[in-house]
Amino acid sequence: MAVTQMDPFAATWLQREDRTSKVRLTANPDYWDKDRGPRLREVVLRNDLTPEEALDLVCTTEGEVDVVTEVSPADAEKVENSEHAELVSTEAIFTVAGVINRDAEGLPLADRRARLALNLAVDRERLVRETMFGRATPLAGLTPPAAVPEEGRLKPHSHDPGRAAELWNEARSETGGGERPLRVAALGGLEDVARAVAADLEGALSVGVEVVVYRGEEELPVRRRLAEKKLAQGWDVLILGHGAQFAESVVAELHRAFAGATGEFRAGPAVPEFESLFAELAAKTAPPEQAEVSQRIDRLVRDESLALSLCAPRALYAVNKHVDFTPYRTSFEFAETSVDDGHWSRR
Image (cartoon, rainbow, N blue to C red; front, side, top):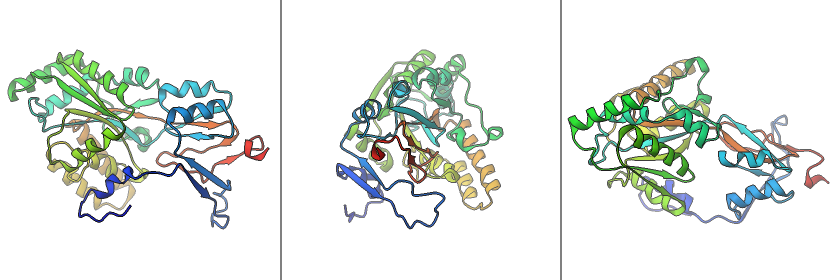
């Protein structure tokens, strides 16, 4: 699809392009790194199945589907009990968090205390245990634990509904607003997360909470409206998932998206302290210095509650038992994937 208009966000919307039902990837036998691969002659990507159909095929048949990506935590047990598939997982560099609309009318979300109240109101441990079926890690700022050595990780906000109520009422009394319901929205398959968060907010803050879920084609206009920042948003907290393509650039991708001046998910004015730290990060070339500034940025996002930190889910795959699939923390690759003699293609 050619992009001809002078639209700075034009490339963002290419996902509307129609897909063919199948895409065939043929191995390059002359690839220079023989130790890495290729180990397969061909890979066929299928776009003609729903996620539910694909999961059922990999679990109950052979020869139709060998690998299913983005398995939901709710479906993980089905894969584990399957005769034909096994569950493969990894600590992905992926974040589920809430965009906080600091420009929301009728609510005190421009006040740090109100945003902190949201973070203190959410029981992340229960969210991970009950909604994510234990297949996630509570989030502190926006950096997934997989991207930070254990000794350098921030601690998540404690679950403190009493303190959350105090902060919310302080912010509401000094800035006004807070009488209307809080609107929590979610994209994609995050409805259960949104409803769990909404229940925590309603219980801790004693406010009405409305939940709306955008599915399928409804997502694109919501994303575009947020990225362009020309019109008011129809929500106060928008729950979505976002990941980094490279383990070395987590802050540049995740934190910029949620809080940066050019961030597609930022809902509110740019934050001068964030921009100053981000410029400092851009000037660093040594990994230890980059890591130190990145941690300061993550701490700023956490302390100022520039987002509603929720959890870092594991990447889950349903894989045919005769396929040796190596998952990556950032991307989806087949370079090191192989099949054994029991695979249907070799019988």
